[in-house]
Length: 271
Image 1 (cartoon, rainbow, N blue to C red):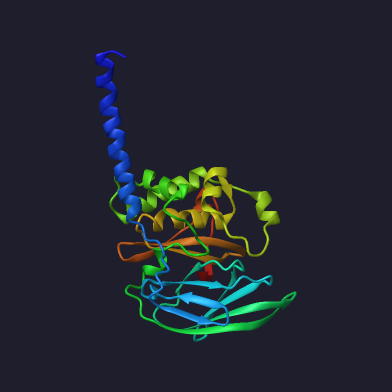
Image 2 (tube, one colour; image 1 turned 120 degrees about the horizontal axis):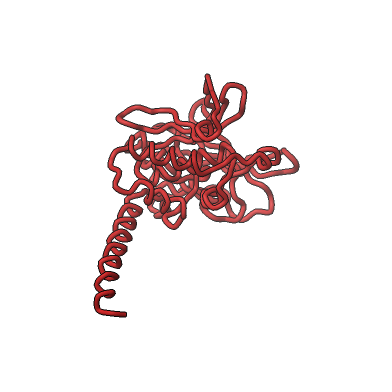
């Protein structure tokens, strides 16, 4: 290598180093759940780490079980039911009902669709901010700082400062990159949860995949994002709400990608 060629390469290396530093700094700004153990509730094999309940989430695990488990999170008349892993590992669940008194119960399968109440915990929650449940990953929209989808979000939002700019960048990327997977739509089973990195690498998915990838990219960029499941006209569907300039705006990357004309959205659940 000549002396002249060395001087052409070095500035490039410096630029790459600065870009990597910037990406790492942006990724570090994302919020990720932790089970610190400062507030722990237990009952009959169920452990709930509520150390960061004020941040809008709890982490729950049950002792390893050969039976299927269900988790019920309830406040007043509002109830969400989840599948709970039976491997004894923590999973993260959002406190989407906001501040108030929660009852969190675990049910163990007896046979078929019959379950019996295994444990029950009570938790009083005061959120530090009502948007926080929509800034962390959870069981329905799971990702980590190592996720390729998070890194892609850093890449496509580089240099963007406003929520509106980031929403537009992510919306454009997801709708132009992911194609609809009709085979998965015809065979998907109850309990299916998308893997954001698999969706990104395969370049295809159903509405749930579109919405979860959108959720991951925007939450990890500091944009509060709701994952909504319900009805788009007469079709069971998943979409998002994003917080831009103080207002929750509906975006639907599946509809954008597939030229759907939805006249009415009816949400059933928010994650």
